[in-house]
Image (cartoon, rainbow, N blue to C red; front, top):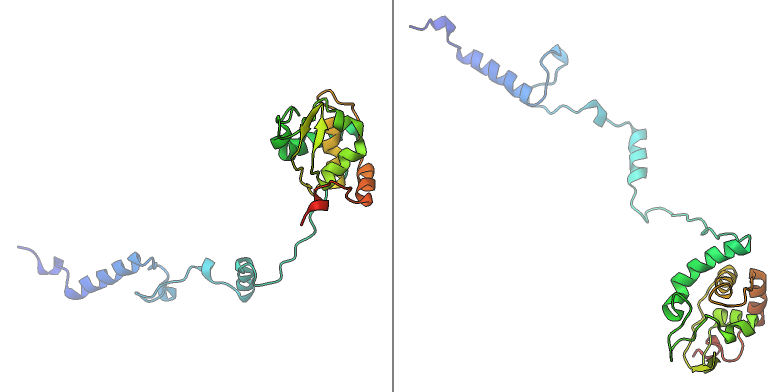
Amino acid sequence: MTDARSRPTRGHRLKVGAVGAALALGVGCAGGNDAPPVGEASVPESRIFSPRSQEAERAVLQPEGSAIQRMGPAAVPSPAASKEERLVRGARVYASTCAACHQAAGQGVAMAFPPLAGSDYLNADKNRAIATVLFGLTGPVTVNGQQFNSVTPALGMSDDDVANVLTHAYNNWGNLGFDLTPAEVAAVRRGGAPAGSAVSVAP
C-alpha cells in the first residue's frame, strides 16, 4: 500500500508544472527575484537596441531611392602607352565589335563584308580607314578587286579604341603595320564626316 505522504499533492503538481513551463519558455529558475514571471517572453540582451544602433540599422536597411544616391563619374582608362599595348587592347575591341562581320582572321564574308586581310582599300589610306570606323560607310567600294555594297555603321568608339583596333588590323593578316595614335583619330574626328559616311545619310 502506497504511503499517502509519497504521493504528490495537487499543489505540488501545480508547482512542478509551472517550473516545467518556465523551462520550456527558456526562463531560468536560478535568478531568484530577477527571473521574469512565468509566461512572459524574455527579450535577449542582443535584441535590445539603443537609439544609436537603431539609427544605424535604418541606414543600412534604407530602401534604394529613399535618399539621394551619388554616383561618381565612370572611370576612363588612360590611353595605351605603347604600340604593344595598343595591339593587346585592339585585339579585344576587334573580337567584341568587328569580328562578327569581318571574321576572326579578317577574311570578311564574300558579297557582304569586305576583307581586312591584305586589303588594298585599308592599306591605301589611313585617314579614310579612321573615318570609316568613326563615321561609318555606305555605298559601293572595291576591295581586292571585288565590289561590296553594304553599310558599315558608325560605332561610337573613343579615339583610343579606334586607334587600338586599327593598329591591330594593320599589324595582322599581311597588312602594312601602321601604328595609329589617338591624336591622329582626334584630327580626323574634328574634320567631320566625309561624303559617303553612314552618319551623313542618316535620316
